[in-house]
Length: 159
Image (tube, rainbow, N blue to C red; front, side, top):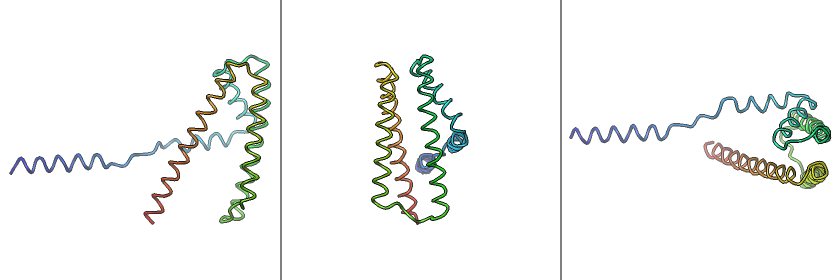
């Protein structure tokens, strides 16, 4: 009888440990807010330095890539401001099919132009390394969207 009680207690305690909720990293959201608080010049400078370390860029490449990063950071900042303004003014409005298509086409056109600029600036080895990094970042973003979708689905099921 004592053995059964000990086994039952062990199983219950193991189940309780296995069911423990995973804690999210508390500083994860802070990091995204910190990057969005930077000016476009600061963000471009940081990204250029990271790319210099990763791709071993020379001075002229750094200048050219800084210009691209600055342009991208300014446009990203403007888009974020427009998005926040639209969200504040009309909370439930979603873009129409035509608007979504236009936004996706603009995004893809920008990616094509950026890739062409990078190809003209970087040498072959650097460009291959840059493309691999871009691919990894894309895969990470897709997996994060999938996780986010699952979390939303879980919340909807609970409600």
